[in-house]
Length: 109
Image 1 (tube, rainbow, N blue to C red):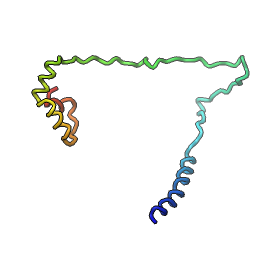
Image 2 (cartoon, rainbow, N blue to C red):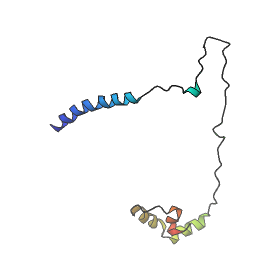
Image 3 (tube, rainbow, N blue to C red):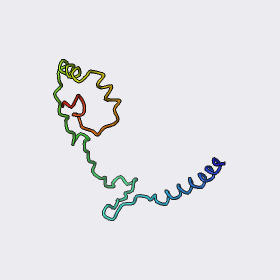
Image 4 (spheres, one colour):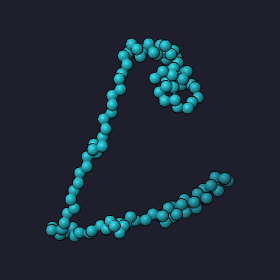
């Protein structure tokens, strides 16, 4: 019984929602300050707007390389805080406020 009521309401709501969305859809027209000049595509002498190129790498910033610790010191640090078991216990804890990187590795940066 409830399923048939849901289907009957859905048959009314879906088209109404579509019609409501279509009433807000408008074609994008140029504003007064940006009038688009229409040219005849068959006119070979028609003015052509200048092409501009802007590389996507123009504002690219290189990543700064962070110093990498040696494997021996990294292994010593992992052993100091309890090894893989400490990471396992950490994963079982409920989400705590983010402390940044200091929240890992026993509070060491």
